[in-house]
Image (tube, rainbow, N blue to C red; front, side, top):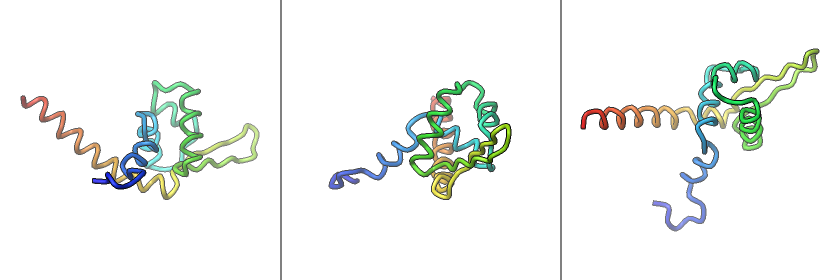
Length: 108
């Protein structure tokens, strides 16, 4: 499909969402802006360190916006950028494929 290309577009996409946490973080932000602890509560089993690392990497890659409000205590909110939100149809298709795959396994 992309054998002639030095960089495969599919590989590029996978590098940006290369673990379960990034996909789940995107999912938690699809409905709007959230604070750090809100994301952590939604994801339940993620550590603070792992969430911080993933959010920072996603921010560097242009998928997540980090807004700091100079209040006491400091208020920080995260939201998807336009680029980050553009992954929604891809993730929706992945959900549909996963459902079909699991159903196929059960039918065997």
